[in-house]
Image (cartoon, rainbow, N blue to C red):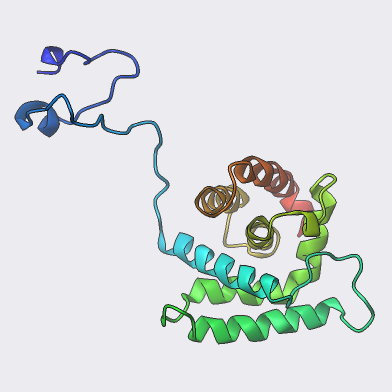
Length: 197
């Protein structure tokens, strides 16, 4: 049956399922099936990470967590930023715009970040090679913080999984250049995960 199709077997030709080849009549105006990109499965943990990015982004935009380690004044130690994040995350986990409670893993991520915010930020700035947290887009900053926490402080997540999830989130939520930048940064951190723990 496949040999009857004009493009069958041609490199780069769209693959058709057996159902599509047998019973469907195709019109000349019908769009070609999209086969260029394989979609990342959206798991419950992916959704939880996305929700954590949204909450962290909102906290960042409200000035609750500093974008830069350097330049903090004596009145605003990192522990205050961690506590502000903890309080805000607890409130947003229960009361959000979509009126749904945040998944348990979202709350775990945000609690872990609140506990380790200063170390996470220091790790990111150390391995960002010329980039400060303040220079990064806010969405990239949120994604990098979450992935760095997962790589260094969450023993349940393998570093390659954390990097892959961060890449997925950056493709969904950030700029075209973000996946490459975050992949390089988080890849370096992932390679050193054992020494950073």
